Amino acid sequence: MFDIVPAERGPGRTVVEVLDALTDGLLVIRAASLQTIEGRRKLHVKYRKAMGEVRESISLYPNSRALIAPIYLFALYEMIVNTSLADRTWQTHLNGMLVMIQHNHNTGGNRMPTEDNMSAARQFALSEETPDIQEFFSLRPQMDSIEKAWLLLDVTKARLRKLVTSMDHFSAVDNPNSVVTIKKIDVEKLRVSVKRIQRDLRLITNLLPKKYHPVMIPKTTGCDIASGLPSTCNGYYGESYPDNFLCTRWNEYRTLILITGDFLLKTGRFLYAGTSRPNGRETTTLTRMMKEAIDGIYASVAYLYDDSKMRITGQKEADVDSAWINTSSMKTLDALNLMWPLHCAVAMEFGATKAQRDWMKKVLQYMGCKMRIPKAMSLADTPIQAFTYSEVLAGLTLLGAGVLRSV
Image (tube, rainbow, N blue to C red; front, side):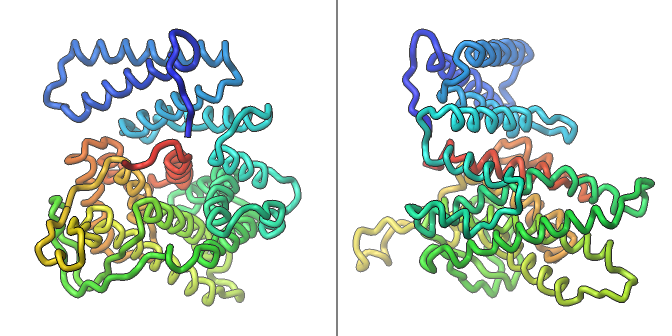
């Protein structure tokens, strides 16, 4: 995404400093048994120095697009090592990155398509009038349906970011032990906005051509994944995708369906329980959508661990029987992209079976322990009551920024 040329001084040099410091930090996590107190002290000093370089460069070169990269990397690093629900450092870095992207857009600097999409999504979300997504797309005739689908994901995240504080507040209040009250009229207004967001989000399934949809692979028995993951539950299906990027995008879509669906179900229960206005049809529809989303996230794990796609290295069809099947383990970035959908699916009150929840929690523990991703282990241990829409949305926004891709 970023076209960076290292230099003796300036933004390019800052990027080099940050990459050096954060690479050392990630290597230490990978080799946890080799850590020493002195080594950790030196790493901390190096980290603080790199952070100082970023702050100085921002003050000297406020319009530099190159500085978005180190801020992104700091946010990514802090997310990976974060184990505290109270520590929002990585989300602070994310907010700073989004502000810089918007500033770059407003000043008319050179931009990449991903930056344009994020800025356009934010502009749509901040529109004072109730915007129409079809009209928004009509202003971009050069975009094909696939580009519109990816833009719609960004639009959905930007719109939800405007509402997520209020959504989390409702979740905290919607608790038998809560002493705080909330006005039903405020809940109804919020519910209308989220319902509109979900309605637009569901257009993605029609925007994407069928060849980019996941292909279901029936599985009637448990499946042992060679990487060491626990065997999957009996009776569930697997999935295959053209590539990992599409798998990640579909899981992002599913997670947004879960966030909006969970909120609509809880607010519906809050507003209509015990009244003469039952919403049974909506409850059935939302529960079915959430079950499909959770089943899809669940099934995508095996794909990302190369269990269901089984890359065959034979050069010709005749060689398939003797071809070597590569069952390499999941890449770190794929694991990070899967981490938030899994966490969201585990925390859902509706749509998932206990067996699915337990298994997906084990996958998060595997990521944390075997793949050295502390955040994944922390999420596996997070009680459902501590789940927040805002943290999941921040994780999706950071990883969906398009800065890094699996290689």
